[in-house]
Length: 407
Image (cartoon, helix red, strand yellow):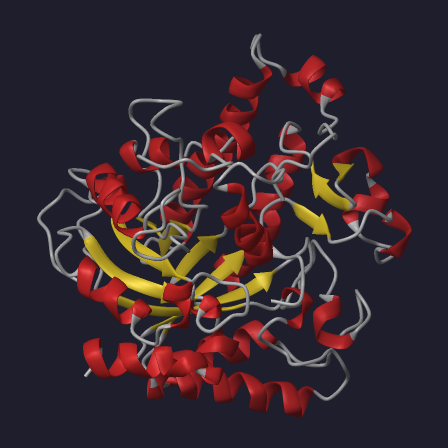
């Protein structure tokens, strides 16, 4: 990946599965989440990551025309690869890829946080995607403020500088504090400014809620717990409740302001291991979203708080600590009877990657994933990380998927 970002944490987590490191389509007749009567369509998606310029733009700078061309190339690539859905990261780090009244322009556009790029990337992306028959889901990161820990490097008018008590430094980064009710309201307002102004087809969140654990550090929310603990005696349960509230409130708000749009989350694939909780998956992960990120991803599905879930099942078939097939079957069962649609997040970036196990050096590994999922009644599609790798097509793995499954 080249950067310690969203998927880099997940890549590191692959090593954690053995406990050796400290953490770093077929139709179904299930009822519909949130009481809605719509059913989705089989998703063939890709993520376009903007944080650290992973996928787009290729580099920050003032050349808006070049950035528009690059984005069009990615959308055309999606069509060429017979994909139908794009998850575009529009709020990577408490910033914006549209003219937001809440947060500054993203530094990943111009190289300087808060600098106006002279155009509206989100408006352009929605229009160009829809002209090509693509769905566009606006991908937000709710609580990440910066991939560094220095508030003075933020734009002068950044909310985390104007309200230093809102953000917590942790692991060399800054995060909004999920335990502050006014922060929870603010991050919703910041995200929904885009949802209300642009005809996005979905609201999409990734796997960051409370941050991935860092050995030897604690997330300092003592004061928030004292002031807003709401009678909880177990801080872990309180943290999970904070995140549950964000998910529930965002889903309700989306149904009010843009009912045709869909709400989805892409979590780290292991909710809990079965040796921690009998309801968990038969895995041996060093990270569990319920315990380490305070994200009850299984509960959100069972309570129908989301319309779809895209677990990042970023391991190969037969991987002993976290077998792809085991996790897909587990998520398929979690979604049974809920109407929440299940798409599988696929680690295209691992194909041919040095240091990966032998199956990732087989061009057919990803195609076998899709073949396996054909037999899972609630799997309704796949999303590939990431756009750059869809373009680069390592080992021809993406071409193999298209030839085998998307013709």
